[in-house]
Amino acid sequence: MNILIIGSGGREHALAWKMAASPLTDKLYCAPGNAGIAQEAECLPLDIGDHAAVIALCKEKRVDFVVVGPEVPLCAGIVDDLEGAGIKAFGPTKWAARLEGSKGFTKDLCKANNIPTAAYERFKSAGPAKEHVRKKGAPIVVKADGLAAGKGVVVAESVQEAEAAIDMMFGGGLGSPAWEIVIEECLVGEEASFFALCDGETAIQLASAQDHKRVGDGDKGPNTGGMGAYSPAPIMTEAMNKRVMDEIIYPTVRALAHAGAPYKGVFFAGLMITKDGPKLIEYNVRFGDPECQVLMLRLMSDLVPALLAARDGQLKNFDLRWYPDAALTVVMAAKGYPGNYNKGSVIEGLEAAAQIEGVEIFHAGTKGEDGKILANGGRVLNICARGKTVREAQTRAYQAVDRIKWPDGFCRRDIGWRAIEREK
Ligand code: AMP
Image 1 (cartoon, protein in one colour):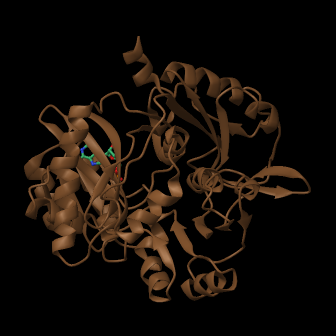
Image 2: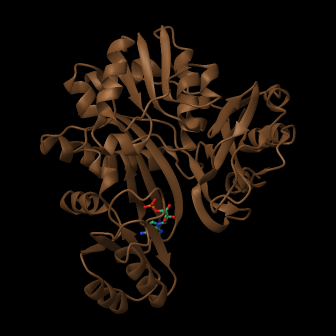
Image 3: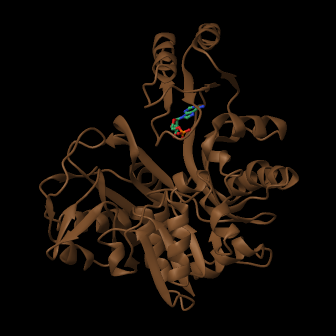
């Protein structure tokens, strides 16, 4: 098959690495891709927001199957448009992608189907929202409806902070004024990321993972897109996984099928494991980044037939095998991230770093120029490693980090600390 991956980050590099190894792949393309992905696939410069251009390219290159990485094109309906043009595509429709695109939609779906989640109210203006916050007290969580690249959530420690968040969101602080916000109860527990593939009817669980969202060691400082991750998540025991499938994933699958919009694609459920059991924090409708990178390192089976089976409604008798090893990834970012940072600095030492046993390096934001690799984004590299334990994977990943010569970059030095504490 000729396969096109849409996207340009570390997640897409990991998908490309895995899919390039499939005997089913004849030719692999990625649009727009990056310098690392170019080692696995032919990168095509393309505006992925222009669906007509994507379709035209698929026809020209005789693409049989498109795998969409990020949420923005999914929420914009790229799968509907590709399928409408007769091109098979992996990912949910625009309607179903509202699971990520609209927090209000997802919360209402949870309520209607008894899916455990934080108690909530929806608001269209600041006055009643603030009144609600004053009544409930802090801590309390304020979320803008719609995609906000991870910036639309404020976990407020005080009523004052919550009120400021409400004013910021309705006042256009996220770019444009929020048309609706959700205010919800603050859940207490340990977070985990849960993944399942779904073909509209059947869902199969993938490996679990945990990520580190804060920029600094000890999980301090501002939130980011993710500074590292590891798999499996020790808190996700077999019994807990089963509860998540029974109490969260399957009720969602049935509700969407019942609504006439069966969900095909990957569910990425952000969970809080509370003393009362798993609760859904949010759904994402694509693989996590950087969680995808550690899942791909642990996946023993071929990914291509699994994604095709999800698209074709054939997951019922499907089984995926995983390496028992742990995997961990350290994100190297440009100094200044998640605030302002420079692009264009030179990165060296990647080859030496990749030679360490068990190490795989994925590019998140790079570009190639005159044979050099240049930083081209906030999160720039994912230094990944497998090991018998999270500790071993961590040691290998940091050995590789130490071989990379990039004075303008930085990373956290404690990725995986929670799991390593448990291993002790
Ligand atoms: P989200 O974008 O919905 O994943 O939220 C970003 C982060 O905010 C989550 O990973 C949690 O750490 C935190 N968060 C969101 N909702 C809640 C909640 N109801 N209770 C506690 N923390 C939350």
